[in-house]
Length: 320
Image (cartoon, rainbow, N blue to C red):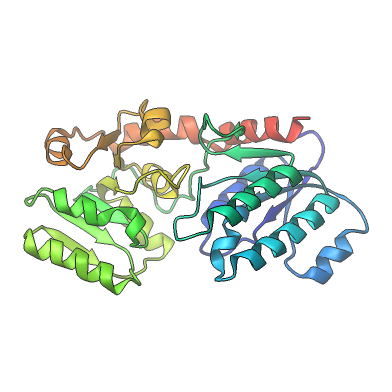
């Protein structure tokens, strides 16, 4: 970046959202000044006095899914988009999902996508998607926490993250080999799903240990550093990419992922990523060849270094 570009980000950074922190690191590497877009209406109106350079908005389309009154959230979102369009010379929309993970109105969601297309200059996705006109920018890795590839990898298989039905754990456990240990770490607020998963584990006598708690970033990262394979069982019908994938490989773990477009179109080039379907899961696990963490980290950092990501962002910032 030749001039000191000022980049605003939406939403605000939080301690629990390391994706935005990683994006900030990439932008600052290029010499940009990074700010968070204010959420106060008064502060937004004050910004109308002089136009700003650029804003990168994330998860904007998911706003409607955070309210029981989705029509009201759509109206609020459109008003906010109008203000953003007036304030900023360039509006870049990072689209993270094809659709919300939970129940939503297809009509209202369709309108939100329509207005996002009208009020933004371009879309960014973290993998090439044939059905979306977008710039491809690699997903950033997460900050290192004592990431030493020489860690003893004594956890064969790990699932981590919030446990929800769309994650596909119920289907995974129905086919998981009885003799293979699996560590699951993640809270679940769905009592019906908890009972269902516990019943599968009990009835099939699975060697599954489920820690129903939230781990902070440092604890989780240390756990991944001890893991040989991270399991991503959810389908890619709603997600474009999975943040868990980048967390896993950024700490040297192999990945066992449910077969789908995310694997076939984007991850199949990596030897440390292995696809599975429910019916072939036992065979896949039996034949799985572990790739050493040092090899994983070397390849990952060549593909997803901040310098590589910054170069891709530069093309977006400089596009007409």
